[in-house]
Length: 397
Image 1 (spheres, rainbow, N blue to C red):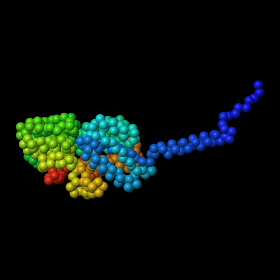
Image 2 (image 1 turned 135 degrees about the horizontal axis):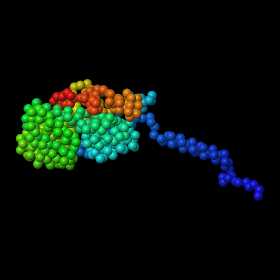
Image 3 (image 1 turned 180 degrees about the horizontal axis):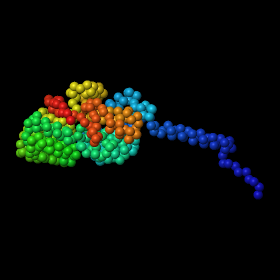
Image 4 (image 1 turned 90 degrees about the horizontal axis):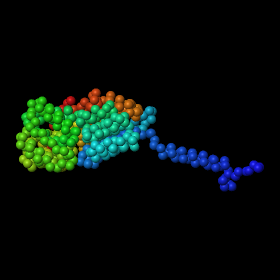
């Protein structure tokens, strides 16, 4: 048989060369489009994990606003230099709704989906206890803005916080009750399902006893987000005739506790912790919270230049005065941004080391870290007077 001419199946006006050229052009175009659509590493992404909804939503909202303020300031200053290139910072947020399971899921999302360089949060101690092991295992630096339970940083060397811890805060209020108010008998009413509340209750009881006082009643309830009736516990407390009532819970529950205590005729000086810091405390509690005191991280009435400048900037941006949660989130963000600037890198180990060795003049006080990555700083005591927070005193570490 002779040779056969095989005809390629192209239209008569197409040549093989033209076909191949077309394929190359199409491939080149596809590669260019892919490159254009691929995520660029020309920005630094950091995460914020706060309760933006739920029964502690005011904490999350002020925390997010303060973190946005810190990021905006850095970006106005041309961002941060990483490996010789200046990059803007972008903050992405997740809502934990004040629940530990949702906090854990949100943390995983920020790490796997958003590829964050570090995370600011959580606020509630139970939520930070849920996400700290995740951040440690993933080697993602974490700075809790407001979780005071001392176990939070025990998860590992990638976990830090910007706030003081419960042993210090509980001591501050026990000392105030014993020596300033001259109380000899104290009662405690707390949520035994929350690490924050339990931790403060334990420390207060221990320290008050060390100062010569006696705990005459220790009453508990479970799940302050859904508990609305505290009269049975308050009746037991009234029968014990305390000189002081310590309520280390969040603002919604404690505002109702103080209203109900007045309704049953229990009129005794009452105090709490930083969980009281919300405008909702007075809105819910009204006259029942007048004269009550609580320990906190920050007072907007502090005359220091750092506080005055922060209050001015926050009011200018949001038309409202900042609370302590805002000051802590701002400080946590500034610690992280300063560390990124020092490290010139988003490498987790470099960022972690820069945080550990940092010294920051924060709004809530000068911050350095101890060997457990907890800040060494002071506390303030505030009193509710005419529906507003009134600065009483600052207590050093």
